[in-house]
Image 1 (cartoon, rainbow, N blue to C red):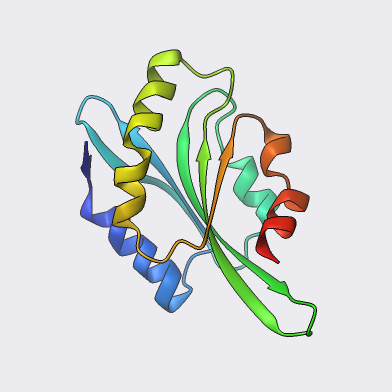
Image 2: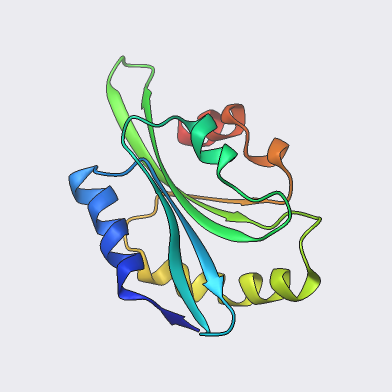
Length: 132
């Protein structure tokens, strides 16, 4: 499975320049490559991000989560989320599962990984608990 150069470029922009809040990646099965499907502006929220995920298709996602820690310091963690809803096609789930590690290696700087099969597994409380 190839990874389009734009995937790495957008991730570097999110990580270094903070020009994106989230990136949603999809596998283009015909071209056998991972491409950028959607990019979120820095002002967008976690709710905006989850609203952009398809309910019955798999996706890889990166989300830049800002929070204030116990010492009252502003922090940020980059989450990698493998979205694989129960309602998606079995073939799609298999392709995403088998290419996840290779794709993740292309994105240097991921701090937390999550696997989600329904929205409750990646709601904001889960994100917060994994960030601290």
